[in-house]
Structure formats: C-alpha cells, structure tokens
Amino acid sequence: MATAAQQQLSRPPRQPRRALHGVVLLDKPIGLSSNDALQKVKRLFRAEKAGHTGTLDPLATGLLPLCFGAATKFSQVSLDADKRYTATLQLGVRTTTADAEGEVVSTREVTPAMLEPRRLRAACDAFLGPIDQVPPMHSALKHQGKALYEYAREGVEIERAPRRVTLHAIDILSVQGAVVTIDVRCSKGTYIRTLAEDIGEHLGCGAHLIGLRRTGSGGVSLQGAVTLDALQAMTEAERDVHLLAPDVLLADCPEAILSQDDAARFLTGMRRKVTLPNAELVRVYGPLPAATASAGRVLLGSAHVQSGELIPTRLLSPLEVQGLVSQQATEPAVLAAH
Image 1 (tube, rainbow, N blue to C red):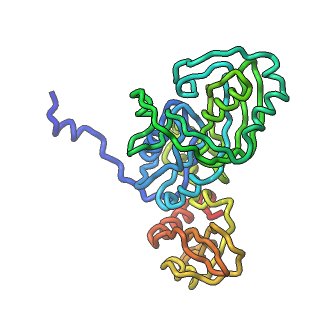
Image 2 (cartoon, rainbow, N blue to C red):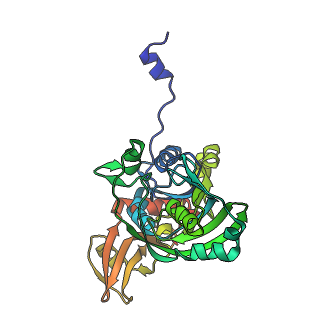
Image 3 (cartoon, one colour):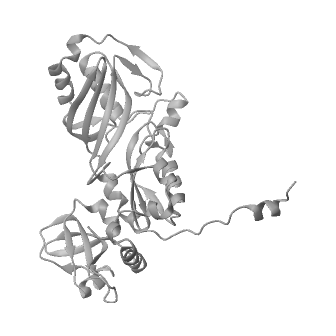
C-alpha cells in the first residue's frame, strides 16, 4: 500500500491560479446551485477571485453571469438589474413549494373557459406593474441568519413582510393542455414561483411552476452564453475566448472618457469636472498607457454624475487596470472595452 507521501507525489501538480478580469455568461444546468456552478467554472479558468451575480435556484436553468477579478466590483449592478425568465406553469395543481419539488396540496379542474386566450391574458395582466409579493417559505431569504427553506423543512412557518416588485411584461408563449409557458420581464427580487401560484389562483384552478429559465439580466442575455459541459470540453485557450470584458455588466450605462491626467486623478478617488447630464451610474474609461502598442481605452471603474461632477463609485486598482491592459493586448477581440 502506498504511503501518504507516495500518494502525494503521484498526484499531478496543482495548477497556479490566474489573475483574470472579466465575465463569463454561463448557461447554468438544472440541479446545480449557483455557488456550485461558480466553483466549477472558477476551477476551469484557474481564476484567483470569482463571484456570481445573484442566486439562480437549482431547479432553474439559464443565464448566470460569473465575475472574475475586477469584474466582481460590478456584480451588484447585475444583481440590481431587471431580469427576464421563461416560466412554465402547470395549472390545476398546487404544491407545498410552489414548484415541482413539493408535495401536492390540492388539485382542481382546469376548465376550457380558463384556457381561453382572453381569460389567460387577463390573469397575467392582473399582476403587471408594481405589486407586493410575500416571499415563499421555500426560498433562500434569511431570517435570523437562517434560510427560510430550512425553517420550512422543519415545519416552522415564519411571518414574512411583503416585498414590492415590478412586473414589466408577461407574454403568453404557448398553451398545451393545462401547461402554460410565459415570458416574464420583471424587477430584481421577483419570485416567479409566487407569480405562478397567483396566476393560478386568479384563474380559479391554482398552479405551480414546473420549469424556469432565466434568459436575461440587465444588458446581457443568453446570446453568447456557454454551458458548463461545453467549457469542460474546451482547452484553456478556447475557454478564454468566452471571457468578456468587465464592462459588459455596465453596457446599459452612459460612458465618460477621461484624459490621461484626469484618469490618474479619478483613480485616486478625486472628482472630475465633466459635461455630462446627471446620471446614477456611468462607466468610466481612460486612455491606454503611452507604452502600449495600440491606441484604445481601458475601464477605470464606475461613477455617478451630479451637477457636472464625475463622482467615483467603484474604482479599479492600478494592478487591476494593468491586468486589463495586458488582457486586451493578448485577447483584443474579446476583452477590448465596449
């Protein structure tokens, strides 16, 4: 039998981590938690620092932006952004969890009248605009440091305060028997399982969620997203092609481009004068260093504009800026600032 020392020697050497800066748009598979997906992709890229942009339930699939290095400073932007989902509802059946994992609570007949286009449209329209949602017990929302779903598993019901969310649009994509698929555009924090239950109650038959796929978050979508299986089958160089610039998370924001002098001062946290209208969030760029072979710009951070002043919000460190410059030099088609 091999000794512990011999086993240690037989293992392949651990690959060093890389100081990567960027975003990978992952098409998360079903059955995997957001953190598990993050850790798997982080290992594949050998990234030193990584984070995701908001939890996607294990039963849900679809868009999960993963941030590396400097991009983690802007993950909150994606977390706060509006979301888009394709949701599949099973009418006539309510469950304990409002999704397919729970036990059946009740079943009711789904009549032909309930499935009439005008009736379905009215049920969806009833929840458009700002509404108050009570978070479900089977959710990751914390109460005294413990997730609500943990209390639910113990049979404990916790009183939850309603939350104000906004449903921007609900489009009916298909109706197949008592299964209805909808496209939902909503604010952050919207519980699609709760929406499914509410639509079912409005119709008079109840419902639960049997499928959920996130298709958009802020300015990014599934277009260009890559699956975990595909990443695992790639070489490291092929994976790196899917590393997008950190400013992809700020794509919907106006931009400010500073001179070399103003860029240096901005990076120290100083306000700069600009001729821009007031804005809550602006992406800020400076010129590439003079020693760089090609002309261009590099992301410095984010800011807000008030009364003609550019006020820093999140700044990249000089080391992070240099890292972006180096990456742009090696992967200009992928990592060039937008």
